[in-house]
Amino acid sequence: METNDKTYDCLRGCVKERNRQGETVYTYKHGCCKLAVFDWLEGITQEELKQYFEVRFKNTRKIIFKNDSGQNLKMGDIVVVEAQNGYDVGIITLHGPVIGRQLQREHIDPATYEFRKIYRKARPHDIEKWQEAIAREHKVMIRSRQIAADLQLNMKIGDVEFQGDGSKAIFYYIADERVDFRQLIKLFAEEFRIRIEMKQIGARQEAGLIGGLGVCGQALCCSRYMSDFQSITTQMARCQDLSLNPQKLAGQCGKLKCCINYEAPVYIDAQSHIPNVNGPLQLEDGEAYLLKTDILQGVMWFSYDPQNMANMIPLTAKEVKEIIHLNKKGIKGKSLLGDPVEKSPEFLSAVGEDSISRFDESKNNRKRNSRNKKNRSRNKKQ
Image 1 (tube, rainbow, N blue to C red):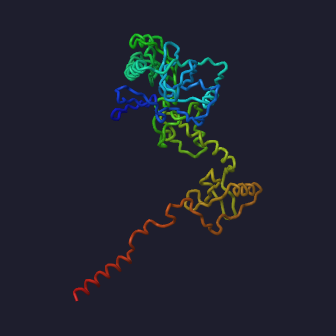
Image 2 (cartoon, one colour):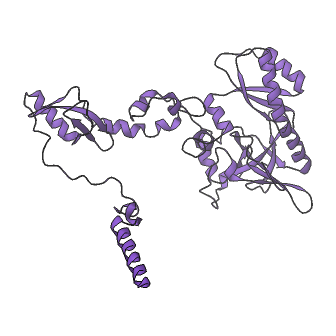
Image 3 (cartoon, rainbow, N blue to C red):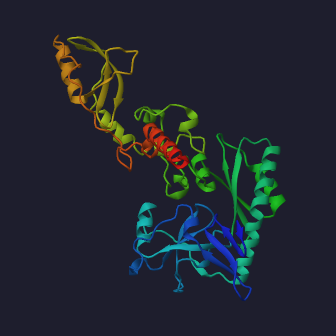
């Protein structure tokens, strides 16, 4: 995405622009980063964690490195870091005491874990080489998909990420079955002249890598903050009385939406207080049938006509339990048709109960105004 002399690289969370001297400058942009972490301990120092820095690469890949050289580094610096072979280039996105929370989340013990090192701040030629490698990613991804299709492999290559020195590329793929990569990697190495690493991801992880907007209008949870994916079942949708339409329940990854699991425990807890009604309630004036249940409010709606939802009568879960208890003893409950209770409105507009038609001129006023106009014109003629 480009505007004038700025280029926004949202895959890595940085802005590229040229300064007055004509030099290329890269600036860290927190809002573009996937799985970004808010530093709520900013300004607080902790000696044992001051040499640890979180370095971000493409999309959701980020690793914690150690600064043994004692360099003065800060958030937003582009640094050259140690890789398995060669070196990589990334952006520092987190430092300070909050790193300790990240280490706990990843189950990393600083005393025993072998951290990779930060070599130095990136120099101009490091950044140029990094950008040349980034420019190859899209073309390599398209070509790799063509090669995989020619070999008739049952897999999908979702993304390609080049290492900062351009000597290695990570191919992220999705496959339902085990895939034989021997011939594929051989062709990739001959075609692209780089080291190849194949990394399998799931459909939810692919959605996190690519990003996008959900039906709620916000960025996808998997690209914003989720790193652990729980299994989602249709039973969670049933307990919330959601429509079992697959098109409405599926997210952009094609799987059930992760947000279905957010409110499921609340509904399950509320549903435990709702009695099971296996048949109509036996009342003095007939049988009452359950037509609707409001789980969160604990209200159950009954009607004497199972085919008519016009005249439903609300009962609390406690009242229903009492009637069921009486029916088990062979006693019929009292009639639900008593004095009508005035129901308070569930929603009030910002202007209260005023009708929007209050701005319309009434018919009587229009007739009166027309009559006055005729009388005035008649008086003028006289």
